[in-house]
Image (cartoon, rainbow, N blue to C red; front, side, top):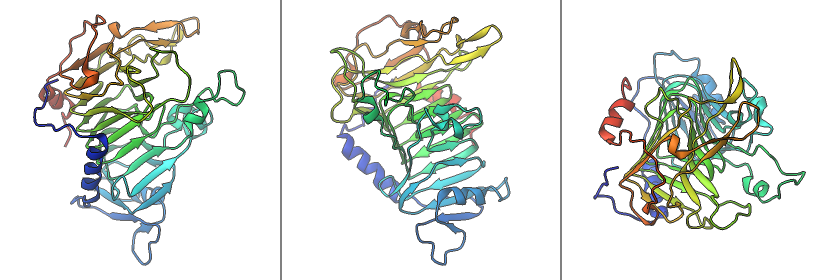
Length: 375
């Protein structure tokens, strides 16, 4: 990464407060199209609904070649919503004022997914459309991960599939922009399972693999916050992992985090978090069901501030499904497409673990590739 000398390092709280102020001052877009509103009390306001999904359903009836704008008022909205319409703007009043939340988790969330898969089914917000702008909203999965994490292995009450997605970019999503927003959860917070998502001036928080998937993700000028665990760990053991890309080898760009602050909440120890590990999803092939060998994950950190919770080795391995069905296949950081350049801060210290891959870290060239045909 090329370090931007103009960045003033402030506390995460001050940085995020400024982002919320910007989000609160945002206005509706100038796109020509229908306007809808979501408020706790609509009064006599036309095209107004008391929940977000009702406004989204109304938006699907509008002409598909026109942009539709949905303005969401202040308040907490306990909903599990799906954006399936192209050319849609969902605008809140700022992350401190407009909150979308739900508490589904993978163990029981398969009922929400077309293929009965629990992890994507758990998403609070699913975007499965093209040309979607989301701004000024907190998107949160409030499943009590910590209470479950604190239970001992073997406890009958412990949930084994505790993934709880806040935002899912589904398979038909592309040209999605998230700005001045907050995406919050614990395990698997942001699932990039579509094409491209651009995230700017926002906050993403979680602990286990909380930015993951096979899509192309470009995150700029944002806060990436590692959250604490409740389980017990041995000294020196990894507690959490920021990224878990499963990028196909034919795809050049995976998860790119640029000019952002890699920070932690209180309770996250020094040296306990990896920048990423390679996820090879279990996939069905003609000769069996096992970890996809072509999912050679790509992740880059460019010009980022890193706090002391980042382990000096930076990257680590991940187990996957072997051909015999056991979780004994091991995929290493050295066989993945990981890079980090021009980091600074206490977590930038680095031990060479032998990663030979050298991908493109020129942010100008990355942007050119990423935004190709993005109107």
